[in-house]
Image (tube, rainbow, N blue to C red; front, top):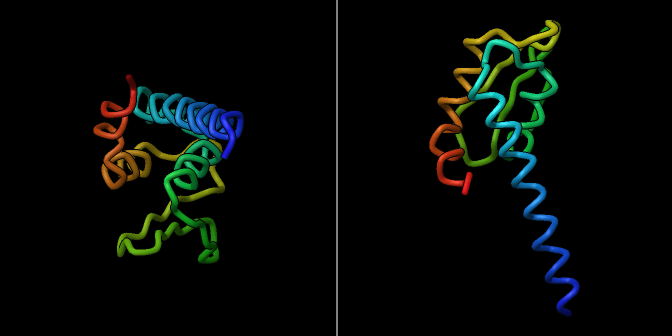
Length: 101
């Protein structure tokens, strides 16, 4: 690997984490006004895969994790209790504190 390749990898990783930190901060600061697309992006970036179970909900699963997350997607904003469930299940408050240097 050349220096420029290693540098590119580090820069891409930095921007990925910075973008994810912004999304998680927004989620933690105001769980009442989160759009489905934002929650979907966060779950995807943490390795959760969406699968439609029919109807108006999307079910998320993660390989090696027995937990299942179900979120309605027909509403403009996700209800707060679904967002709080994601925050608790992904332990986002601790993750944010550990990564926000």
